[in-house]
Image 1 (cartoon, helix red, strand yellow):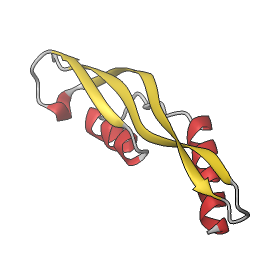
Image 2 (cartoon, one colour):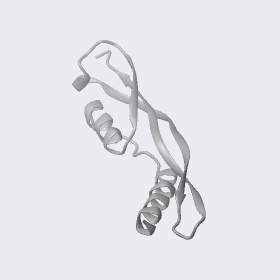
Image 3 (spheres, one colour):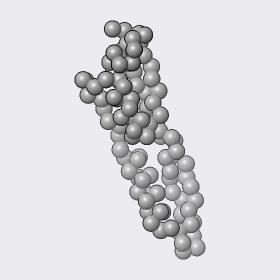
Image 4 (spheres, helix red, strand yellow):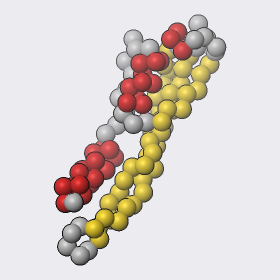
Length: 99
Protein backbone atom coordinates (compact mmCIF):
# COMPACT_ATOMS: atom_id res chain seq x y z
CA UNK A 1 0.00 0.00 0.00
CA UNK A 2 2.82 2.35 0.86
CA UNK A 3 4.49 1.74 -2.52
CA UNK A 4 1.21 2.51 -4.31
CA UNK A 5 0.86 5.75 -2.35
CA UNK A 6 4.39 6.84 -3.23
CA UNK A 7 3.76 5.97 -6.89
CA UNK A 8 0.54 8.03 -6.92
CA UNK A 9 2.23 11.04 -5.36
CA UNK A 10 5.17 10.79 -7.77
CA UNK A 11 2.85 10.47 -10.77
CA UNK A 12 0.79 13.49 -9.71
CA UNK A 13 3.87 15.63 -9.10
CA UNK A 14 5.50 14.60 -12.38
CA UNK A 15 2.36 15.19 -14.44
CA UNK A 16 1.97 18.74 -13.16
CA UNK A 17 5.58 19.63 -14.03
CA UNK A 18 5.86 18.13 -17.51
CA UNK A 19 4.92 20.33 -20.44
CA UNK A 20 3.58 18.98 -23.70
CA UNK A 21 6.08 18.44 -26.47
CA UNK A 22 6.11 21.21 -29.03
CA UNK A 23 5.72 20.04 -32.61
CA UNK A 24 8.66 20.24 -34.98
CA UNK A 25 8.03 22.19 -38.16
CA UNK A 26 8.43 19.12 -40.38
CA UNK A 27 6.05 16.89 -38.39
CA UNK A 28 2.65 16.14 -39.76
CA UNK A 29 -0.54 16.97 -37.90
CA UNK A 30 -1.19 13.25 -37.46
CA UNK A 31 2.17 12.73 -35.72
CA UNK A 32 1.75 15.78 -33.47
CA UNK A 33 -1.77 14.79 -32.41
CA UNK A 34 -0.62 11.19 -31.84
CA UNK A 35 2.27 12.29 -29.63
CA UNK A 36 0.03 14.50 -27.52
CA UNK A 37 -2.52 11.70 -27.12
CA UNK A 38 0.31 9.33 -26.13
CA UNK A 39 1.29 11.85 -23.43
CA UNK A 40 -2.24 11.55 -22.03
CA UNK A 41 -3.88 14.61 -23.54
CA UNK A 42 -7.38 14.80 -24.96
CA UNK A 43 -6.66 16.83 -28.11
CA UNK A 44 -9.09 19.47 -29.36
CA UNK A 45 -8.47 20.35 -33.01
CA UNK A 46 -9.43 23.56 -34.75
CA UNK A 47 -8.62 23.90 -38.41
CA UNK A 48 -8.79 26.18 -41.40
CA UNK A 49 -9.58 24.49 -44.72
CA UNK A 50 -10.81 21.08 -45.72
CA UNK A 51 -7.71 19.21 -46.87
CA UNK A 52 -7.14 15.70 -45.47
CA UNK A 53 -5.42 15.59 -42.10
CA UNK A 54 -2.19 14.21 -43.60
CA UNK A 55 -1.83 17.43 -45.64
CA UNK A 56 -2.44 19.82 -42.74
CA UNK A 57 0.27 21.91 -41.10
CA UNK A 58 0.30 22.49 -37.33
CA UNK A 59 0.20 26.24 -36.70
CA UNK A 60 0.01 26.14 -32.90
CA UNK A 61 -0.28 23.94 -29.84
CA UNK A 62 -1.76 25.84 -26.95
CA UNK A 63 -3.91 25.99 -23.87
CA UNK A 64 -2.90 22.86 -21.93
CA UNK A 65 -5.36 22.26 -19.10
CA UNK A 66 -5.35 19.77 -16.23
CA UNK A 67 -8.30 18.74 -14.11
CA UNK A 68 -7.09 17.56 -10.72
CA UNK A 69 -9.07 15.84 -7.99
CA UNK A 70 -7.96 15.22 -4.46
CA UNK A 71 -8.25 11.59 -3.32
CA UNK A 72 -8.09 10.46 0.29
CA UNK A 73 -5.69 7.52 0.78
CA UNK A 74 -5.02 5.53 3.95
CA UNK A 75 -1.31 5.83 4.70
CA UNK A 76 -1.29 2.70 6.87
CA UNK A 77 -0.64 4.56 10.13
CA UNK A 78 -4.24 5.36 11.00
CA UNK A 79 -4.24 8.72 9.23
CA UNK A 80 -5.55 9.54 5.80
CA UNK A 81 -3.45 11.47 3.32
CA UNK A 82 -4.96 13.58 0.55
CA UNK A 83 -3.13 13.29 -2.77
CA UNK A 84 -3.81 15.20 -6.00
CA UNK A 85 -4.62 13.03 -9.02
CA UNK A 86 -4.79 14.39 -12.57
CA UNK A 87 -8.02 13.01 -14.04
CA UNK A 88 -8.06 14.83 -17.38
CA UNK A 89 -5.58 16.71 -19.56
CA UNK A 90 -6.69 18.68 -22.61
CA UNK A 91 -4.80 20.71 -25.20
CA UNK A 92 -5.73 22.51 -28.42
CA UNK A 93 -3.97 21.99 -31.76
CA UNK A 94 -4.59 24.48 -34.59
CA UNK A 95 -4.15 23.28 -38.16
CA UNK A 96 -3.88 24.96 -41.55
CA UNK A 97 -5.58 22.60 -44.00
CA UNK A 98 -6.11 25.16 -46.76
CA UNK A 99 -3.45 23.84 -49.14
